[in-house]
Length: 255
Image (tube, rainbow, N blue to C red; front, side, top):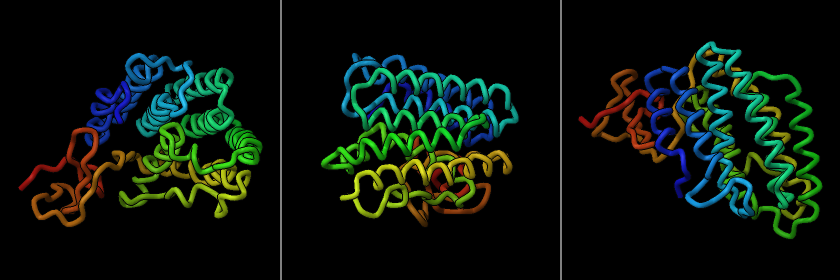
């Protein structure tokens, strides 16, 4: 279901497709601010919310920081990342939900990694410790991982990874978590350990390549009605009200 800020996200994705990463950073920033102010109509970001709709705002903040770095605007990326760290820490301090608090700690680490800040490894370890504690107490540790908050944190990593993965999915749900859900502590803390190893690599690859792909939406392989004008692929990605090449994120029109 949609959250507030989606209209700015559409602009951001179109800017990614145009390789205008500075504009993408600005549009993702606007999307994040809109969501963080009121995640959904009538919902305060500080109100009790067992779904965690505010997560999209944090993910978009980290995406904005990544886009700024890809654009070569490192100082602005760092400031955006500091903003995301502050918001995630504040949300962590105000929630009464321990699982959400651990996920907000994960977002702190994600923002640090996205912006190239110091202390990334320590931040992911803090998140892992929080997940170990809450996971040991949960009867169903898989339950929070299906909420919008946790999905936003996972989708952030998958999005940034796409450019170096030929547009394919990296880090499936099973890759992020421990193999045994009955071990709640290990199951949830694996998220932070995996993200700590992989997400900084995804960010640095995007920066080195000068390319941040569009996020993945609804896809179809070998669509005979579409052909990418840049790479010739017929694999299609429909996302954020646009039609893009699954492989290189170039806008695609039907033949």
